[in-house]
Length: 408
Image 1 (cartoon, rainbow, N blue to C red):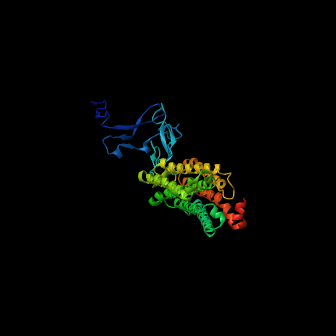
Image 2 (image 1 turned 60 degrees about the horizontal axis):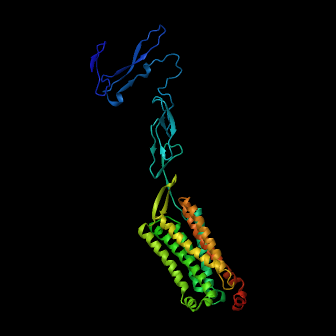
Image 3 (image 1 turned 120 degrees about the horizontal axis):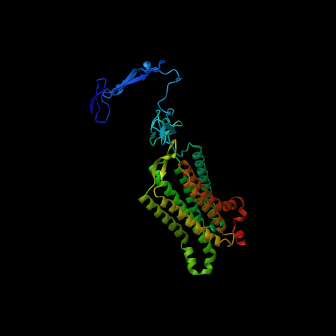
């Protein structure tokens, strides 16, 4: 459409329906004689360069005397950085609310329509107007928690080594021989490995430590619980075997206890091999666990096998507890059943409590909970089974004799 207005100007519209010729911006002046003169104060030229489209001469604008301040073109205040504009429903676009940016998002300018998402290795500051880099963290030996757990692991390891040395030194004493000294050696060595394996959970996670730490501790625990089970079955066969016939006595003499330990360990080794072959653990940078930190941790891979191997340990512990509980009334001098029952109760309580605590925690806390569970359950077995024997060996040598054992 092209036409000429009454002033003689040729006017036409472009393909978008805009006036191609542009506009003059006029200021209406209110005078005392009720006339309304129009004073040009600027112009808008669509064809000009972008920054020169709109030209305003602020000094030429005359405001009516009743204006105490310049009028605002919007009905809302400016949204500061850290906020975004949210248009009010049913109102013009110039009416909006200022809404804080959501967690992890920022706005570094005023009156923005949307906030920007921070990168995975960044977090939004308190004002949510800037993204800051996250710090890398893991359960280190220098942390108070890591140092405490490492000290406990080393202390329990030294204590276990002392008990092992004591048993080797008094290997020919009646109380050591009566409680199957070779199985006691195997149990003490496996407990020592359990305590030391907890140190692999501390420090910067690497591919090697992620692969080995779960396997080592679970196989060591399988050997420990299998040794406890073998000791329990040995006690039962020692007292009930003569009443059950020649075949049971033959099994007892032919190393049935070692077969039980080997079988229990092989099943756990098989489960761990499937774990490492199908979905092995690997180091991972967890950017979601803590807002301002990148937690370097080991992703355990298959959660099913992770809890499956723990379930197998619980199965062995349940069998050991059941057999030991049924054999608790056998003669006290040779009988470890009561001590084994207590140790298995401690073991099961620790790991049953571990499951909800582990699932409800993240980052360093989850690693610390697993280390604590390893130390607590291993220490429970060590204390319940070996404390009475070490006490008799070192503090009451008068009870460490065949005459006393036979009298009992």
